[in-house]
Image 1: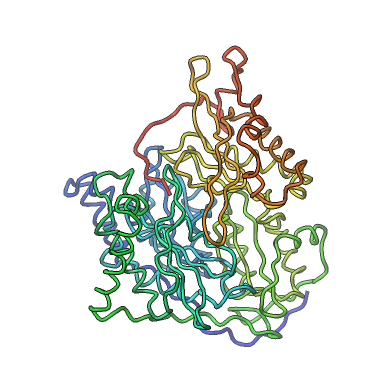
Image 2: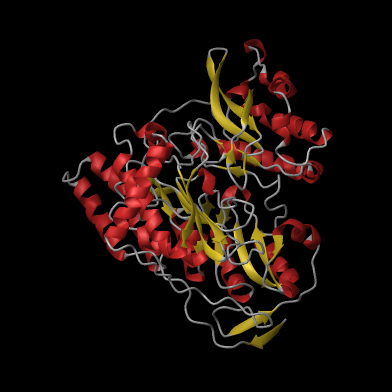
Length: 586
């Protein structure tokens, strides 16, 4: 390889979201709790609002690093790597809300971890608790050929405006927001969020369609259209109005029925819209909310070097290595900027090691735009890769163990953490997620033939793994077998998000956990044999016929049970349902 001189790097990229005063206050509140000045309930509420969750294991915590828009800079990658290395068991976990989580962090190390993250600009403020959660965004915003305009600056403006706002941490329950821009799709999943913005135009002018009240869990709702078109200048005002209405009318007495969708159901859509319009008028009367767009990094220009940061670039050998073509088929996406592509880095169940996080730093500065984006499929995206350098990048990803193909295909299974750490989870969903991933890796014929499907796994009805909107989804549950608890999975088919609504899967059976893999194969064989090409197929088949496909797998008599039926997937000891007040519901 040779060494090439590069021009000076551009100005620093995005501004951070962290404040060290937040960490200082966290330490002070912890001391107050330990000395009896703060009650256990008050400490728990404060801790959650600062992104620190209790786990089902005593003495260890989950820390959620909040990444608005999914943006990650090189300095932040290093901080994420350090926390993973020192406190996270050597890895981080990308979530379906584009955050990075760490599990099993000793409470004594939480302060240090928070300070390391804050030093790089990463906050955990309002990453959890009854607050405005992380803003998710389409990872291809700004490079997608079919978007009406680049919505990236607006998701950052919204996140900065609402973070630490007067209502943002005192809501009746969490409020999940998202923003996207691709025409004809809802890749940002706005229809299952409490608050969603979708880029659009009216008479040539850019603006947003505003949605509210979407959600999964035990009450599934596709979001209500609040306004068909809001001019860009009124983006923050529209968000403020939804947040204020929720703050005022949300249920503060019953946590199980406190999300915005429940409030809309209670008062009715028309009454909610009237409340929203009244709030908009009130905000205008107060002088409005000026839209201030934060400075954005300058992307590489066509024909120029793509390096970001550092004075020199190692010019890699650009000959493809084995596996390149298969990898590029699904992991490379052409951008609207001529000569550039985006690369999806597929992570198995969202996991990435400290070494891999650190290994990506020179790649994003030497091949891409100088930052990564996380995705709601638990992956990473590196954008602005010159087409001519894709083979070289693939070579480097192979070296890091990050060149797994099949991104965003059936093989790319999504799963929540499950009972390995969450108090609410019934089953160890990651065990099933890993098993299904291995199955699909062994059966590439299924992945190739089963177009238009995805697989998602959740450990309980709350749906953090988004199984309700999967082509085939699995929800953890429990059955009694020979008088003993045994893990099982509820099977859903036909879920998904369209351009105008979310559709939720139909429940077709409940299978013992160890038969879930066979269930997936059975359903895929049926799907392929029927000549189906999209998840819409499931809605065309009568429910009885769907249930018949797995009826024999569902049945398990007490006398036929073996010891494996009483052990959860990926676990060693007998299955048990641990009841407790969960802090880790998404």
